[in-house]
Length: 534
Image (tube, rainbow, N blue to C red; front, side, top):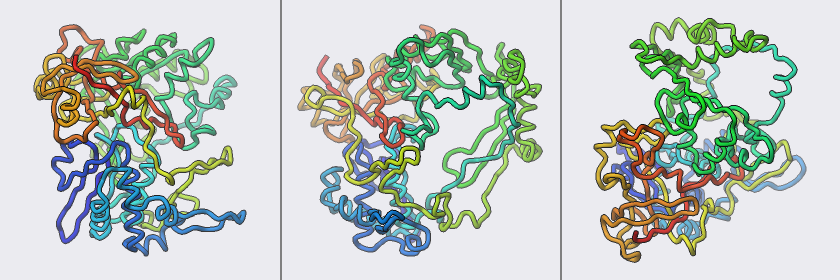
């Protein structure tokens, strides 16, 4: 999904680019249907027009950016710049064939975006939590930089990670010191994926592929539900079966809690003290403090208190590393500089000095915005292609056996992460989404006609990862040969009389992860599928 916002002559324009007519697309000024997975190519196609017609922000490029033009490095090797790379690889006609967007529409959109007084291009599928390729994000970020929409009103802001808590020094024993020196099991931050902090979608494969003992001996799950949210849930269950000890701290019953050896339920949100980090979208750091408004209703315990008590029971340097009486004492010490203001106001704002928000200073080696056409790996001295010769992420499945493409979509009335939908919200879902136990799959009428399917028919959906029974819902607002299923259904592990149990299908049952070669993060935006009459 690529969303473009522009403001010219006080007229706001929102253009939504995605293969399905979502709620956002329906409310936008313009919806552009695009071949799934090609949003990054479209961004570079827009950049081609902006560069070709000299519509880019010259001041930003000359004063705040590097890598726009080709250059010679210290070894005397010529490096291709962003300008040359785009002009060589992303001509409008070529991008039109990749994306399915007409050439004239690409050119018109590029000119409107570049000439808008205030503009911003946003990347992220669904509610922003669906997988995506690093190259796509780089392409869309480069489009913002190209048009000078960085640290400007209406544009994007680059902020540093919040650094507001003070942690005490830890004196570790030899065993702990050796453990800290071991690489992460998922490979994040290592030689192969130096840019990633964590790669949880790789864990099931790593655990299942291990010979002998599993590399994970104990798993503590805090306010997460990996058996529902990880792609390829069958592989995740297989991995969980190999872990000797699983403990869930979930506030509510969920799939992972049902699979755990022990459940140590956390207080509910209204019952616990909690620091609340910055919500996404703010150009500066905001820290909130949520205080309990009711006493715990059941025999639950704050997870912070449990961790501190566990450390005390273990004794030695571990107990010394957790010297606090309880979680509130820890917060008071860690947030020492802000604790009084937090208690008085309930939140604090940590703003960077105005000089740090100029478009001429970035946290890079050059202190400028860097147009990247390759990724360098300092650990291996290797480089990998980031942007040239665009090709969509190769989704799983044989086109001959699975001629269609299945993608997920998010609904405002379906909780799709670790917490299940409330019964009332499930009961008010449209019957074009869920009818009794069957979920509806969106199909373009032309595709349905070719398959001999009509509105309301029961059909069998097959992917390389799983199968599901679905009802057909004809939808003009989806591209031909593309199918769409909502996220948030297919829950299990709940009591039989719970209204959410066993309704529809979990999209993650039908799809597996595909690692990004640059980041290792999951990039599987869809999977090939087959739809037949049941």
